[in-house]
Image (cartoon, rainbow, N blue to C red; front, side):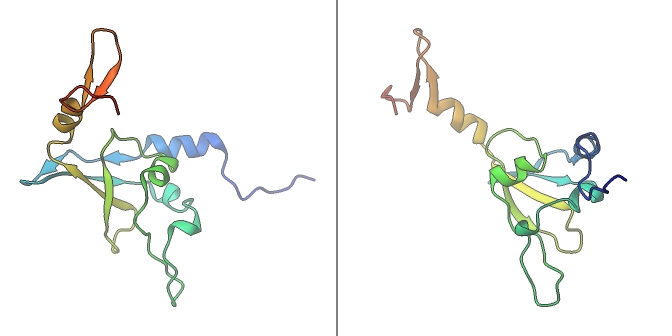
Length: 126
């Protein structure tokens, strides 16, 4: 007799992760934005601790940390922040980052000829 597992197999999870949709980036004067659409079967696998508990039992997804959203399979470059919840479509996660994030990062990290990274324009190591 075999036991039924409630956990989906790794291959199925990887299939869901491959189906995550990343929108094109769009921006205003301050931020660049994108939304990430999770396949609904993947959304259903998100840990309960990632949801706000509400009296009616229909908890909404809370804002996730970088570690949390990367842990469910979302892959983005550095600097993106999960900043808003769209309750009507909880499987759509809204992200933003500073419009000049890449430029700021380039200015902060300079590589010396000896290969050592330094922070800031003054050349002092952090």
